[in-house]
Image (cartoon, one colour):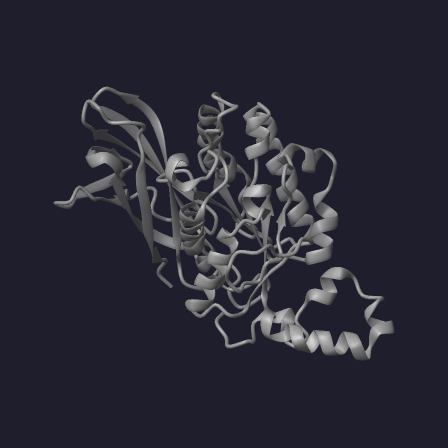
Amino acid sequence: MRSTRPTRSRTLPVLGLLATLLLPLWTTLAPHAAAAPATGTAAEAVRVMPLGDSITGSPGCWRAVLWNRLRNAGYTDVDFVGTLGPQGCGQEYDGDHEGHGGELVTHVADRNLLPARLAATRPDIVVMHFGTNDVWSDVAPDRILAAYTRLVQQMRDSNPDMKVLVAQLIPMNPATCAACAQRVVDLNARIPGWARATSTGRSPVTVVDQWTGFSTAADTYDGVHPDASGDDKIAARWYPALAALLDAGSPGGPGDPGGGEPACSATFRAVAAWQGGYQGEVTVTNASAAPVSGWTATVVPAGGARVTQVWNGGLGTAADGTATVVNAPWNGSLAPGASAVFGFVATTSSTAGTPAAAVGCTARAAAS
């Protein structure tokens, strides 16, 4: 999946020359077609749509950070797509996106807005952080998840092999919405279960935990929208999940289910908390197009907490407090898009704040 294909920015001067020479023809093209690279290899690029609201699009500079991280790692055959163009982020990047400021995911679903955007851009992968405005508007999680389901079905109608990365939303704590912080937690707790029910082998839905380790005080400028630190954290969370899909192969290519390297993603949620400890849960998802025969997860609790007990997995603990959890005999085999869950208990100081943990995982290939 890696190549040395020229970037979009290097083709723009060529497009400008063609526009001058072939103006009558140029005016018949759709805006998105006019922005596409003028090379014969454009169709081979994996088309990635960043989808959401102002956190994605106004200016959504995590997209610039992610784009450059991908390119620096050798992923030069990726085309960010969307009906909206870039805003200034102080660095060169492919700025096409579908992040509409102020939009509610429930409105997009109810008004059937996504199909036209998909038809104009034809993505292979959707990277979705969507629902912040719904949370702010006190829309119930059931309605938000129903909207997610409708959008995923529309994505699959557009492309049966669509791969979808869905964020557990970054925290929010605006001055005008005291209840918003807990509403985000309540929605995020429901997303992994929704994803497991919605994911298929052909069109996996992978959850990416954007909430854990993100601080509204340090990583936003208004309690909602990310600042430069927040952009870096968001891009860092998207990167491994997106890279796993790129490594597995573009839809319809040699990396269809059964091929590619195994990869997994992990997400954390707090189930219950008490003075001196809490119960957590980690969902491990096969984020590749290849079957997985086993996985190993890492859990690094925040604030000096220690994992003391695990179920549905085997526990090992390093001197620095990092917990290593190996799958149990019954939950190691995961088909593409499938998930397994393990739980744990952690001890904390009596003054510890909201439970949080950084989690990750590695996958083992199924025997051939």
